[in-house]
Image (cartoon, rainbow, N blue to C red; front, side, top):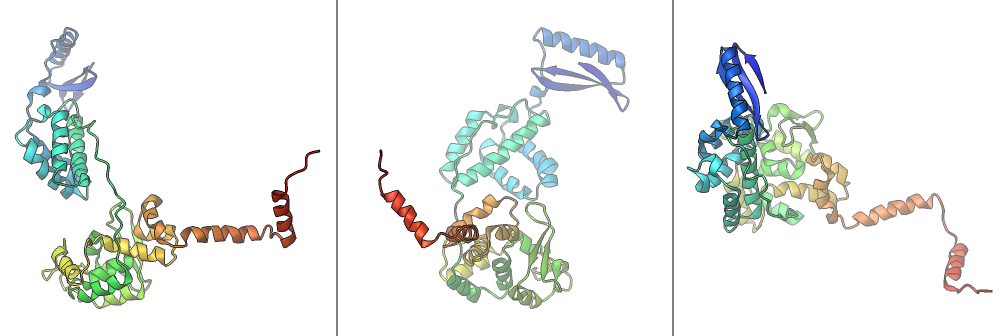
Length: 355
């Protein structure tokens, strides 16, 4: 327990139930000392009244603060938090933050699972856990009721990619407006957001490189352009008032091309396919062409090779090539002769005579 001064105002610092508390007193040191002594007595006698528990903050009010003070300044995907809160508000709206229990969150989890996928529920729970953690950190509540709520198990092995014939069909049925976008996705493995944010200044025509500065993991990435991508970008008409390569008539960047993309898929009979699967197609075609996984990892911008290993099974001779390389390496060390092999077989098959 202590007293400290900040900008001509005295504060008292103490702990209750293991949690640190600070109270703003005023310009009087004597008053601060008196209040601190009072708190010591109240805590010792079990009469301490936690003022924070009297400050009733409603769920929807705190989510607004969370979005403005934490999500927007720190997360590129803050809109995901916004949409997750829209679902959570249907159950927790008008409830006081401190009154929400773990049991209520578990009930939300089970009920929500009846209408959406496990992954969706988990994303909403993750947002809820982070929000409550911040509420504890900002001293709006004393404990996180979502802390011990477990996520559902997910099957993240989904790998949908286009065969060569399907690629031709898709490009043939794409509207001219989005065909260059699809081509760039198929030939670079870039994410949708990375393509939409691509600017003319990011294209190095002389070196045949695309420079990505605003990526998902925050790391700058350089992607080589093949002739098809280069020819495609050169053919895109530049908007006089926009820095973006792919933009709307008013010069603003695209945020979604879902309707046009879905119409093209339906037209060529491709089902169960998303825009992100173009990225899977890029990686899958490379692996099936014999490109090593680490190169694919670098092109995709994966930090962890585990993310890239999902494509390993697509290479029919992936393991066979590895063993063949070992065979070639061993061959330089020792090449068995026919006689030595026969001798080894004879020794193995014939029983040893015991004297």
